[in-house]
Image 1 (cartoon, rainbow, N blue to C red):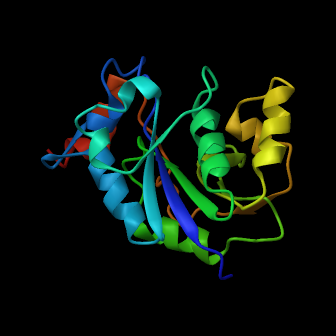
Image 2 (image 1 turned 120 degrees about the vertical axis):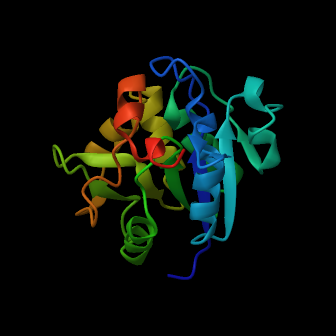
Length: 195
């Protein structure tokens, strides 16, 4: 498939459960966001960071090419839909910034199996076999489909992928998509080993 692939690191969350900005968590002297941008940059044509308008001048986020959410109160789908609208002619490899275990093999495998015949390519969760929407490919042309879900009150990316024709893959590393939402999750994560 020859269409360009752009990367989007979702870093616009409010990190309420964590109590501090997850994008800024320390990973061996660098931020988790910096790590994710560098990792994603190995596999895509351009990398962008998704942020809310009030985060645009943040010292860490402003180092990167930003895509500022056009939508309010939609959670991660705000960043995804904004990126799809701003650059509609590319496929998007979307990852959340709070995936400390994600690795190159996971991203390579996802890209190697992207299916242009379906709007979404995603991994099955290793816990419940449902789609993992925050490490997935959102194919060119899927914005209107997502918008129709949002217009009908569905803004959960997982529900959108469940109710759509999604190409699902088995995870190559069963813990690669485990995220960190709380201080307890952080204590158990690989980030503790990177300090």
